[in-house]
Length: 207
Image 1 (cartoon, rainbow, N blue to C red):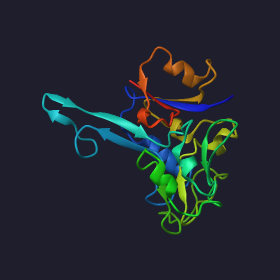
Image 2: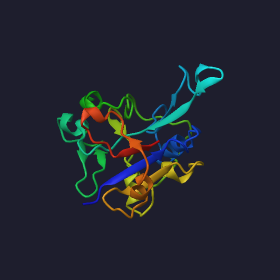
Image 3: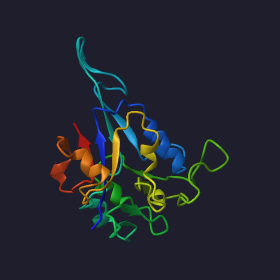
């Protein structure tokens, strides 16, 4: 059975946020909505190092929906608006079914990966950007990273991978040993976010 997964090489990520912008543009995300964030592992503010010179440390941690094999959000949704696709394991949010209760946001252990549209979607420009076949965003609904399923349907990769200057992301069927993502994790050490939660994430962080 196909199971889409993503591997992110933390040694290659330079914290440029290009993936975040590519995601926002391709999915025509409303103002203040970000599905893909780059967190700073260092000081208290973005792009600041921890420690005292010369013993400083600074790393980046890209965070988006983990597309878990055992997603807590799916179990929490009372109307089936959050569901997992049987054909590839991608976790989807159905805006037409969503009632805005935000139970999925409470259940998800990965803070910030689910975003809530508190008001009618607003944009800094007066025309739609990104891919023409994305699902229009709606007021009073939860939204999240979809692994760009509209692009997958066309045989493309998620938008966050298109412009990554460090080539830090790998994607594909984790059950296929010949896939890009499977080859990327071979022989590498990696971790999953909050493994102790039992959600079995499909995002691998290579160290």
